[in-house]
Length: 204
Ligand SMILES: Cc1ncc(C[n+]2csc(CCOP(=O)(O)OP(=O)(O)O)c2C)c(N)n1
Image 1 (cartoon, rainbow, N blue to C red):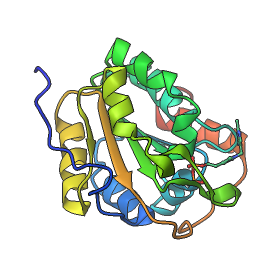
Image 2: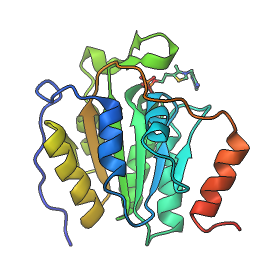
Image 3: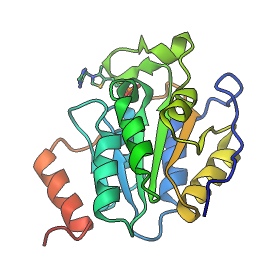
Image 4: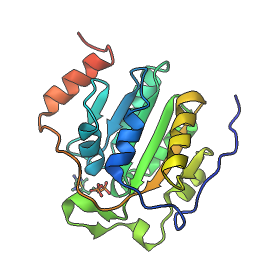
């Protein structure tokens, strides 16, 4: 099915929402063992707190890797829907990944970015999005036609529903506040990797 035009808010008009709430709204919709990759930063903390699933992966150490990891999973398992959750600071470190996703066009991949305008977990230093950088404009420029700012929670859910039902790739951006995460991930990378591989059926 060809890409349909989707509604987008502007970064300036998008409602600033609660990141933990948005994580819960996503995971509440997952009924087919969809994979979710949470990036370093508060995204993986809130993904963890929204309910642990064997198909969740939590990136502990490196900024910008949620999209590349999710992209790899999407290529390896085209029957599975895959979501990448990333913070604005981390995504800004790995913008080339957007062009790569556009080039290969995995239909089962959705990138979600939570843009709070800061590197929150390292002391709230402002990121470039605080000075006018628009990640949806960048995603579109990278070739991701189905890119949108969520206007509010209802629109965010509509975009998630579209990513679950229609062909991707999708790029969904949400403005988020600076509330602390709802929980903290256990710091055990080997266990996180092992459980994720089992969750994907890639190991016993
Ligand atoms: C390559 C690299 N540089 C710096 C860091 C330190 N660091 C870890 S998380 C983080 C901020 C992440 O910001 P963002 O992705 O916007 O998420 P937020 O903390 O705002 O939720 C920084 C600077 C790192 N882990 N890796």
